[in-house]
Length: 203
Image (tube, rainbow, N blue to C red; front, side, top):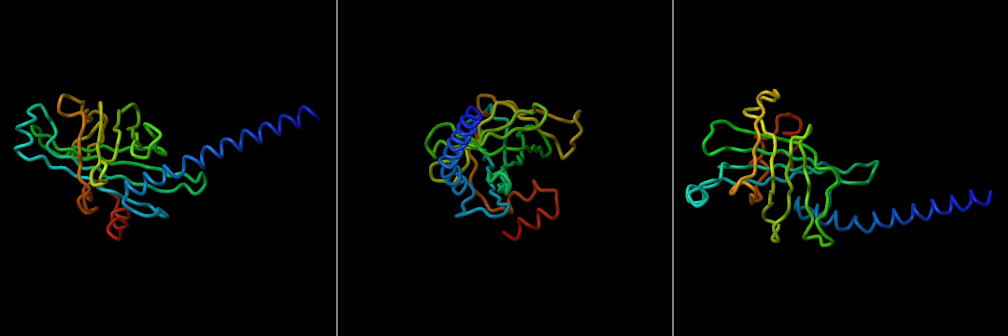
């Protein structure tokens, strides 16, 4: 019995340490979420929209940039069972030398951190089946999102057949994008579900 008591005590202590660590991390995660979604609290599904349309002057200064416009819609929803935030993303892309609208989407898990400070927090988002992904950070003034990517699978005009998939690969001018915070209506084109679209419009 004695060894079992020691084992149970050890497990209890370990559980306490784990809980303490999570409680310690929670304020940073919550603070980042509040900043990212520009809210004081999240008790229901919440959205944030970021948009950038590159003008002729910018594209002239970055001749190797393939992207002419980009939209990012982020969602956050609290998992009531695990008491953690779940994030997802939808990305819209226009090319400067290709016709059509391209988009991608995926999950961002519970969020991650590049360092100990809240200002260094980021979301690491991925596309299923090794489709690459993006990292999302916040500008210091919270008015813009910084997207960093190496590669991400995208589809043209919502043709999600695997044979129709394309890949946006980071290049000299397509590795980091700064998108400005925008009204949710500017990201409505990324949403296909009518119920979700209606929910967004009531925010």
